[in-house]
Amino acid sequence: MDDGAPSVRELPQRLWPGPGGEEQHLLRSLAAAHALGGIIRPCYGPLGLQKLLVTAKGETVITGYATAILGALELEHPAARLLRDAALSHAEHSGDGAAFVVLLAEALLAEAELLLLAGLPRAQLREAYAAATAETLALLPSLAVRSLGPLEDPFWVLHTAMNTHTLSHAEFLTRLVAQACWEAQELDGTFRPERLGVCALPGGQLDRSCLLPGLAVAGKPCGRVTAMVGGARVALFACSFGLAHPKAPATATISSSAELVRFLKGNQQMTEKQVLQLATGNVNVAVVWGDVEERTLAQADRSGIMVIQVKALRELACLSEVLGTPVMPYLLPPQQLGKCQRVYPQELGEGSAVVFEWEGPDTPALTLVLRAATKEGLRGAEQAVYHGIDAFARLCQDPRLLPGAGATEMALAKILADKGAALEGPSGPALLAFAQALRSLPATLAENAGLAVSQVMADMTAAHQQGHFLIGVGVEGIINVAQEAVWDTLAAKAQALRAVVDIVLQLATVDEIVVAKTSPPLQQDPGPLPTKAQEPPSSPKTPAPITR
Image (spheres, helix red, strand yellow):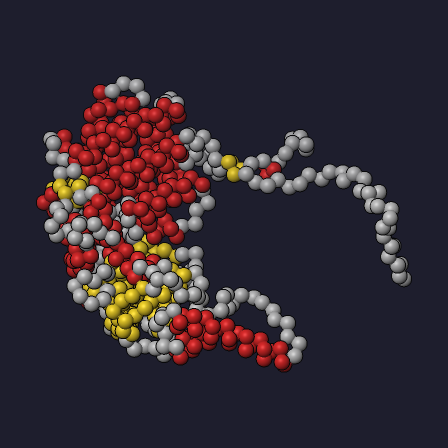
């Protein structure tokens, strides 16, 4: 081997499979999609399994939600990261569907691999997949056979969205969420999820959860002002309650006791000035997302200001939306304070919360107070509640519903397969590939339910061939989703399909994954040292004395 040739470490690193004769895919992202899908597949559907997840911080979490699992994974493969980000982005805007995005993208990439092996060029594959996507999205509205009426109880729709995993007292919690969404809805039919708070308190049972008027945040007042504050004027702060950055490393140069006294007195005066500004601005309740300094807290107690420390920034955002006051990044009173009738702490079993309450029937906000005996149960109930709230928000924008339990996927697969078999050119195989990928989702539901996958898929195929497109996968076999009231929202399904195809079209055109590495610097002759001829003669430097 020539010694002058660059070594492998000096070249860009290619993400090939390791040595040992492993099969190499034409799509370099397919192996990463298979690995990510293998993690998420057992959790898909209402009968999916859960993962014992150990986060990077060392926390142990038991969850079956794909959003939580994907968010905790530390991925190195760039294609896996792109697929994970696409799924999380869809879940953030639609509330759920991260597992749907990962599994369908994996299936479409596997079918694209077969089309490439058959000789279809990548450019034609991209065009054919885009045309198949447009055909699929055009077919979706024709399958929407139900819609939620403006005066209809949303319980039967929310139960499908919330019962995605094993959850005790699922019916009770769904009715509680349906009641909260119904009461928080505006008279014109609009719904703002920010006006519906969720307060999770450990201790007790899930059936002891309740609905409180007003907003409740987990925690209790920090100082001595713990009695009810009437005519509350609230300020929200996303900063430390005290001097700016009290824990920042700094060094004070003090040479005498007098300077030390002046330094301590200056800090005290600055603290008193900050609290005095709040009291002068008529603030009597301060909600803080940050550290609370003891000296500033003592000054707030003397000024009669209740200080409440919240744990999450979303609680400040919810209070800002309801109270109509901005979140301040500095400890200064806002121009417009938030106002409510009263603020008071309330003990709820083993937990405590601070309630912001308004009088009269036109309460601008409601709070779902959740109780559970374990941290995992409380986390699962909170995620289910957020899924229900997001589903109701989507239904207020588009009330159309699609058959659930895999029935919509099977109906689309049947229509696309019939059209694809009659077409020539790249469009026909692309439609057939889409149909095969869609069939993998009800097959996964049947597998996670412990059913015979081949028998269930044969029964569903026969039913859909006869025109019964409401047939889906149940606990014991195929079911009629209309009779079992299993529905999906049209808006979420369409958005998920768009997210899947966007990431698939990007990954399908990648022929090689290259990771650029910094090569070590070459050893070259440094050449002659620079001279000092450029120095002006008028200012010569005095040579340093030589010491022995």
